[in-house]
Amino acid sequence: MGSLFSKPSPQPPPASAELNKPWRKVTWREKNEILPYLEGFRSSAGVLRILLYGPTGAGKSCFVNSAQKVLLGRNVISAHEQTMRVGQSFTVKIKTHKMKKRGGGRFPFVFDDIMGLQPDNLGGIQTEDIINILKGHISDGYIFNPMHPITADHPKYKAKPEAEDKVHCLVCILPADSVSRMNDEVFVKMKTIRTKAVHLDIPHVIVLTKVDQACEVVNQDLKKIYLSRKISEKVEECSHKLGIPLNNIYPVQNYHTEISPDEATDNLLLMALNDIVNFANDHVEDRDDE
Image (tube, rainbow, N blue to C red; front, side, top):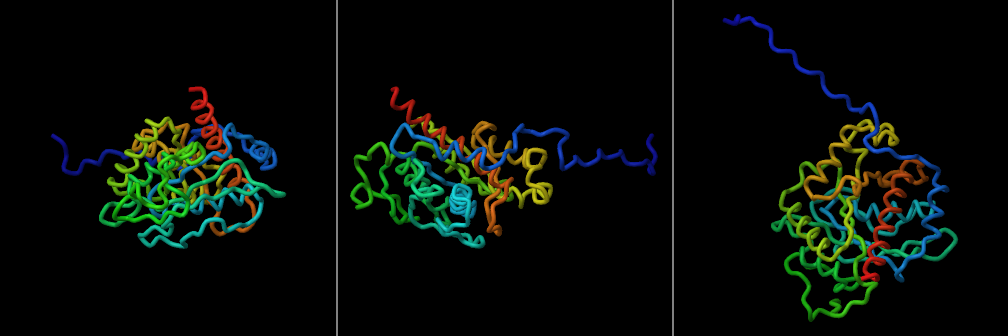
């Protein structure tokens, strides 16, 4: 019979915040080694269209600005951002962002920034509107109605979209620091959109933002992102919830307070941009073959 004063069973030590080896092997390179590929990229279509979507406050507009900053090598304001989460989407209309090149000209790809997803009782963009964007039916500048999706008689509705109006890659922007607390209703909406993208053969990736706010190890040293146990767990969680393969999920740190370029930040953003642009181009080539 056990004693009333028996010692409790020893608890296992807490898992280290840093892994013994990287959960993803990458080569950190100078920005000027990576950027020339995108600068010399030629699309199989006229312009590749990349749609950014996700919950309110995930950092979609910030990602657009960060991408343009790394491509230009200077501070920019391309998309208007909200400085803090206020529960409502700061973006209220579809805005197409044409990416500028250093020395002039444009890249052969654009980003469509849209209103954020929210539970039905809080408003946000309608799922049907995002599906219509995938098909190329909604023109730039359309102001979203949180209560009703666009109708075929609206002046911004394109009944017969051109190939360049359609989306060539779907990018879900998710916040690493709060993805575990996101409303299930929002995930249901995102899975509905993903299912439609799959039916349309549109590639789908996740860009995981705010990694510095999700993990102190990463906050102290961004180059330890692939040694971070917390970020590895967040990537696996996103893969499980949306059914997107792990190698199609890209953790990044957007530019927030910095006004000068940062090598590690640029590396992560360019890794994601390179693959997103290539996936979009692959989609166009596969469609043309068919």
